[in-house]
Image 1 (spheres, one colour):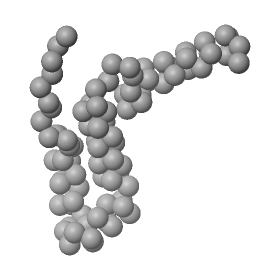
Image 2 (cartoon, rainbow, N blue to C red):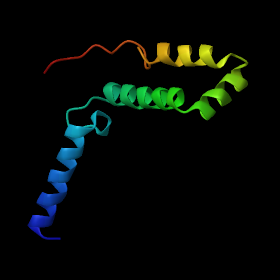
Image 3 (tube, helix red, strand yellow):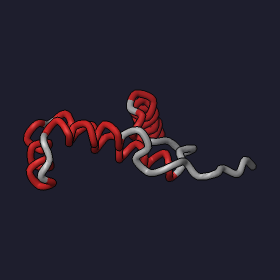
Image 4 (tube, rainbow, N blue to C red):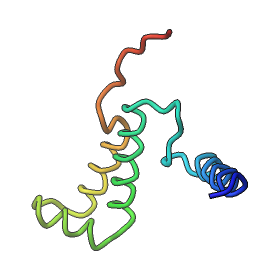
Length: 87
């Protein structure tokens, strides 16, 4: 692998990290990463009708109620953020 290849790969990674929030970066904390994953999952559940209807059937709720529950869970999907220690 040449130096130009490594530079190209790193620049592509930086571009992806700037474009998509969920891909993370070096300064991303574990809590923020988990929140991104949970919100992406809930957004996918709400956006795909077949899986939303599957969850509604499994939990014996209406589809609208399940959509509402997922939207509410997107607010704080992993609970309140932990206290940070600034170094």
